Length: 161
Image (cartoon, rainbow, N blue to C red):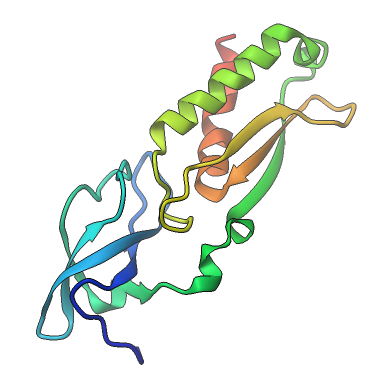
């Protein structure tokens, strides 16, 4: 890499995939540098990303500089639509369905305090709603990790509604 990190610098650190979280990047602060290739880093903000709690020793290959253009939230918003059982089509239009989808949102957001794929300080954003089409489908809008997680959580909550 053509950059040199120093104590106090903010960097992005690669976070591996776990059974409950997708792989991504987490904003960190450099606490110390060892031999120019190992860095003691600490996540910025509250960290709920499994496998990355507190201080961590990171290799240079697992770090990248933060860029100001990465700070815009627009670059981190995604959307997806997934089909549900056609028998749920009418039910999806009821207040009970809206409450169920709101519960899915809350479960996902409770599990993702600060995301590895969004700018430092960004809170996870998520909206789970009935798709506008006539088909039985759920639309998900939000930060990337929240959308990925909602695709797992929402169907499970719908099955138990």
